[in-house]
Image (cartoon, rainbow, N blue to C red; front, side, top):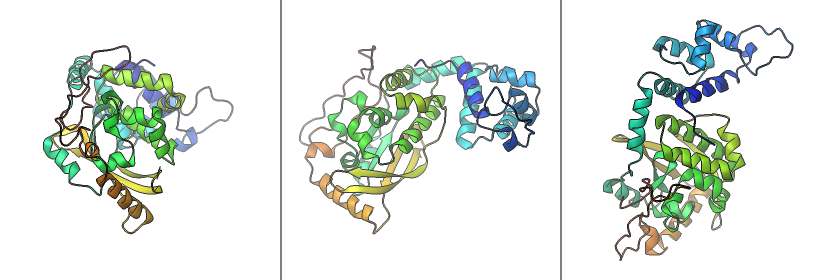
Length: 330
């Protein structure tokens, strides 16, 4: 599955949003009979947005050179986009417009650099022994984690650095996949966030490689990716299962770092006094008694110096520099 250019991505996203709106839902008369396209026709969407059909057709073809904020706002309202979809569309328009290619190349060069996790942030993770927590980076890379999160999901230290990626784990790692009782919901949310993040980093070759690998090995990923849903990671909850404590329900909160929007601190909590809270306490005790190596975000023994992180080795691109999936000492 090849990553598309900004104009094609813009057009496909607009068509996917238009296809989900029925004429009657938009207050338009439907004359019955078979419609050749799902949802609204281009002419109908243009009428709702207050622009000519020819203008909107050019817009949907990715020709975003002269799209004003006013017209963009009218299209957003006609398509009934939520906040995440609006932000995504705005980025697609910028990427497809004048200067978008050069800006995308600059962001791609920036994305090629390894992400650094500040020592203070790593200490914060370690200071929450009763709260599963981790730092999520670009492309859903897991940059750092605390022992309880590793106990809850999997032993990240035992994974190759290129496999410490949330999307890869959820779709292609049987143990992690089995942790989510409502796996379809988790997978759908994750794909929506992955596309949202891709809009922030157009032209990132590692994004293209990740998506290609997921599509090659997971038909479920391909199905969800083609729906073109987008969503920002904010807060919510998941129903999980663990071999030690059984099923538990946890809520998560996502906190984007103020000095680095490409890093997000995510924590999981349970309602106080609930069975899930008791289960989390059991897991916290197990994490505290685990070997010392599991207590460091590098996965190294507390008594031995951390080994340097291995370079990222995406398929067909050996020897590339590390992706930023290095944790702890990165």
